[in-house]
Amino acid sequence: MQEEETKEEEPFAESTEENEQFHPTEGIIWDWVCIPINWFRMLSREMHWSFVFGVVVVYGISQGLGGSLAGVGTKYYMKDVQKVQPSEAQVYAGITSIPWIVKPLWGLLTDVIPIFGYRRRPYFIFAGFLGVIAMLLLSLHENLHLVLALLSLTAGSAGAAIADVTIDACVAQNSIAHPLLAADMQSLCAFSSSVGALLGFSISGIFVHLIGPMGVFGLMTIPSGLLILLGFLLDEPHMHDFSYRQVNQKFIDAGKAMWSTLKSESVWRPCLYMYLSLALSLNILEGMFYWYTDSKGGPAFSEESVGFIFSISSVGSLLGAILYQYALKDYAFRDVLFWTQLLYGLSGMLDLVLVLRWNLNFGIPDYFFVVIVESIAQMTSRLKWMPMLVLSSKLCPSGIEGTFFALLMSIDNVGVLSSSWAGGFVLHIFKITRTRFENLWLAILIRNVLRLSPLCMLFLVPRADRNALILPHESLDSKVAIDHSLESKNVELVSLVSSVEGK
Image 1 (cartoon, rainbow, N blue to C red):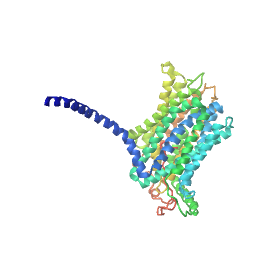
Image 2 (cartoon, rainbow, N blue to C red):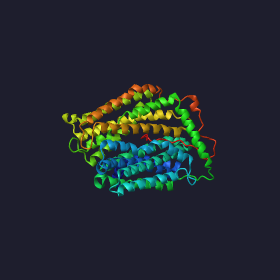
Image 3 (tube, helix red, strand yellow):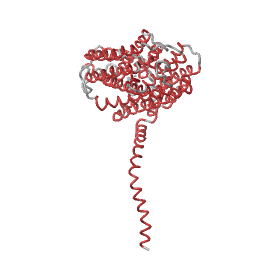
Image 4 (cartoon, helix red, strand yellow):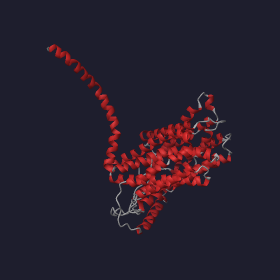
């Protein structure tokens, strides 16, 4: 009997041992799955779930997913619906980005002027309605005049810019209230934006193929509608007895503080370099896009292929940010900018290889080569942009850090606009049209040479690294724009934290 009992217990013992062998692995997998879930729960518990929802909506859905869908949809809308030339499309792309240039204005409005007692919620609602109306007009009107189409695209861009600045202000407020979680909030913003862009570019070509660019604009009403919902759900205290007489003085004080800082040589010199380095990097992406989809001289990529190429390039951008974070961030600004600018200029030569069809001589298919080219282009662009962001943060004086940072980002956006318009001018000069691309290689060559020209202007950038103080002491001690002694019921300028895309 004892032997039989022992035999009966043995299988049970064996099964228990087998379960114990598998439990550790299953536990590790489960722990990895639970890490992001617990992280989201922690952030929701510490700063209210509506704030986390707002970051995901603005960065992940509106800018990441919606921005990538709208970007691809707009390219095909200009090419196939409005039937404009590449040079014109390049100029129009610059026009629609103008709302991002006036980011300090949106920041001052949401910081200084509350509406119905709220400083954030009404601006989200306004941005959402602006986006919904603009996208509906583009999606429902089949023969929309080009001027009205541009106004609608610019209005949609303005809605996204207003929402971006408003959520930045919310992030800054929570960073002040929860300083230990400031890095987690930035990680949440970057993670949401990266995942949203990757998903959006992956499906953008499919949707453009299935429902056309106008149908994509119809889908864009969903992110804008979520901004309206966010405006109603956001947890924000109501302000009572606000005196609008303060508004004038606060605008004047902020303007004086920013002008005083900009006059400093240690500020305007690097600002000038950042503008020139962006403006001289001619943007001829519209010409390249028309060539990508051309059935004669170009590769004749389909909508799905274009969307997939852009999705892969967004991974390259993420890799560039990781490379800077773990390998380059401790080096001096001038040294990093020298090598990144040099790499950025040389990497542009790959476009020349592609347009001249040399890749086919080496047996490299167009699709595979374009994926490599776009990934390297995004990675090098990110590597060039990251030290500029860090340098910009070092140029902000105490008391107006957020608004001044938004001003610096606007200067950079003016550089991007100049680059876009200059690129359109070059495409026009060389007669690069919807069907003629004989001189596209020459435009690429000029662009690459100009990309290398900022290397001669690096003397404008300080040799300091990210740990050094760049501003003079009088700027560091400046508190002119903000009275920190105000009670919480009063309005004060709150730091605006720019997203990693640098818009």
